[in-house]
Image (cartoon, rainbow, N blue to C red; front, top):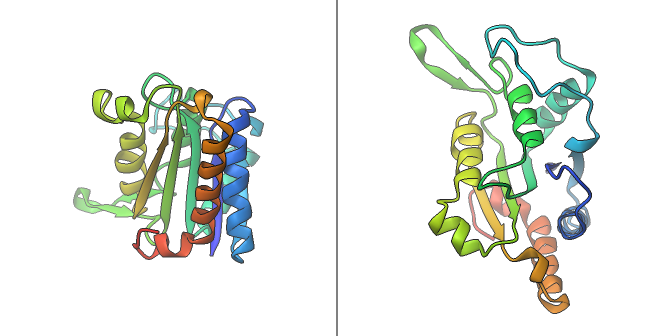
Length: 198
C-alpha cells in the first residue's frame, strides 16, 4: 500500500515528530511505501484572493502534493489542536490542494463527483488539554471538519481519528506505549483501508 503522511505542525514538535516517526517506521517494516509532506517546508501562497472563482497558478509544491495524494492509497494527517481546530498553515494547504477538478467536481444538475474515492485516511491530533474536553466540550470541531467536510466530501473513507491529550504531561512510560501503538497502526494500515478497525 502507498501511504502519504501529511505533517501539519508549523514547528518542529518533539512528541509529534516521534509519533510520526513511529507510524512511518511501522508502516515501512510492514512493506508499505511511505512518503511524507511537511507543510512547513513547502513554498506556496495560502491566500485565495478570488476564492474558487479564479484559482492562482499552482506552485511546484502544490503540484507535488497533488501527485503524492493521487498516488496514495492512505493519507495520514498529524497536527496540533489550535483553538479547537488546526493551524492556519494546514487550512491553507487544504484550501489550495483540495480544489474543484482535483478533489471533487460538480456535474450538470449540481450532482457532485468525489474524485478521491478509494482512499482511506487517519487523523492524529495532539493537544495540551485532555482529549475528553476537546471531544465532548469543544465538540471535536477541527477533526470533524477535516473528516466530514473535507475528506469524506471528496470520497475518502473510512477516516479514523486519534486524539492524544495532555501531550506535555505524558510520562516516558506512557509515551512509549503511545509510540508502540502508532507503530502498530502503521503496520496494520491495510486493515484500516479495507474498513476494519485494527
